[in-house]
Image (cartoon, rainbow, N blue to C red):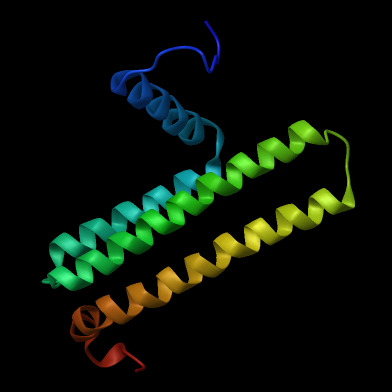
Length: 131
């Protein structure tokens, strides 16, 4: 049937399409897999350590922000490759900026993770911690 704007869509079709997109990114984007693995570790740490409800909310917002931005980055890269299959320095700059955006938010998420988990991890390190 293809993608046709005239087609009537119900909620189940929308979810099915969304799941296909998630599977596509899982199968074809290695960076997304690494970020998803890191997110799983953070969720496990949230369960293991007695984090507050607010800490959990902030961590989950950061997890979904990073994963969502990585998906946007993947979409934009594919779209740019579709529009300009040959090398173009302008496309390279756009891709670099997109990657920088994901990196910036990922670094922010890492800092938040350290701020949240450090008080729980520090006592486990005994005399081997530096801060």
